[in-house]
Length: 345
Image 1 (spheres, rainbow, N blue to C red):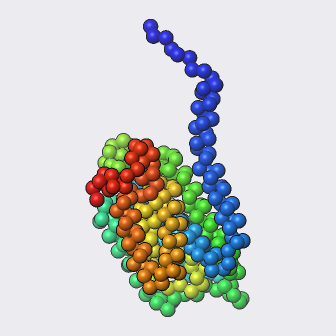
Image 2 (cartoon, helix red, strand yellow; image 1 turned 90 degrees about the horizontal axis):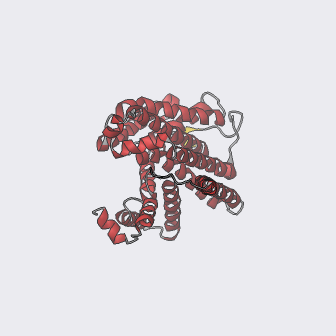
Image 3 (cartoon, one colour; image 1 turned 60 degrees about the vertical axis):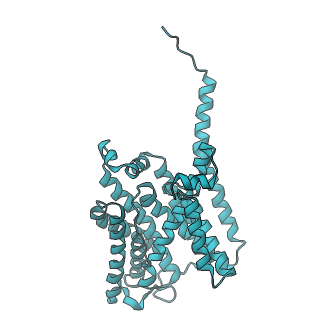
C-alpha cells in the first residue's frame, strides 16, 4: 500500500497564516487609503475639496454599477434612474414632509432599492442590448414623470431643499461635511463590493455572467440573484443621489436623470476593469482627475482630448487596467499589441 506523507504542522500553520494575511491585506490597504483621504482634507482649499468630493461620489456610483454590470454582466444604461429617484425623494421629503436629511437619506436608499425590484422583476428577464435599452427607457420615462408632477416635484422649474431658516430641518453640511459624506459613501460601496466579490453571492453572479443557463442548471436561482443585485446597486445609487440633491440645494429633472451620469459610470468601470473591486475605484479616480486637469488646462478642447484618451484606453485595454495587469502577471505577457490581438480589436 502507498504510504501517506505526513505534512509538518509548521507548514500547515504557515499556509493558514499566509492565506489569512492575503485576505486581510486589501482591508489594511483600504484603511490606510481612508486615513490618507481624511488627512488630505485639511490640505485642500474649497475648490479642491469639492473636486475630490465629486471623485468620491463617482467612486460610489461606479462601484454600484459594477455590481449589476460588472459582476452579473447586465449592462444597465438607465442606472441614473436610481440617482434621480433618491435625489427627488430626499428633496420632497425635506421640503414637503419636513424630514431631516439623515432620515431622508436612508429612506431614499430603500425607496431606490424597492424601485429597482419593481422594474427589475420584468426587465431582468431581458438580456444584452434589450435589457440596456429597456433600462434607458425607464430612466427617460421617469424623468418625464417627475417633470409633470409639478405640485410635488416642482416640475421643470426644479425643487429647492430648505437649508436655511425655520423650514430647514438639517443644517447645510458645507464643503467639509459633504467631503466626509461622499467619502463615507465611497467607503461603503467599496466594502459592499469587496464582500460581494469574496462570497458565494459574488461567485453566483460571475457564473451568471459567464453562462446564465449553466448557472441555472447548477441550481442557482438566477432571477432572484439578479433582482437582489439590482436592488443593492439601486440602494447605493439612491444614497448618492440623495446626498447630491442636498449638496446642490436646487435640483432639476434634466440634471438628476441625465444619461451622461450613467455613461460616466460605465466608462469608469470599463477603463478600470469590470467585475473587480479595485477597477471601478481606480477608473473613477483617474477619469475624474484627468477630466479636471484637462478642463483647467485645455478649456476649449478638454472634451475632445478626454474622448480621444478614452477611445485609446478602451482599444488597448478592452478588459480594463486591473484585469490586464492580473492577466499579464499570470501569463508574463505585457505587450499591449498582443493584448489587442488577443481581443481581436
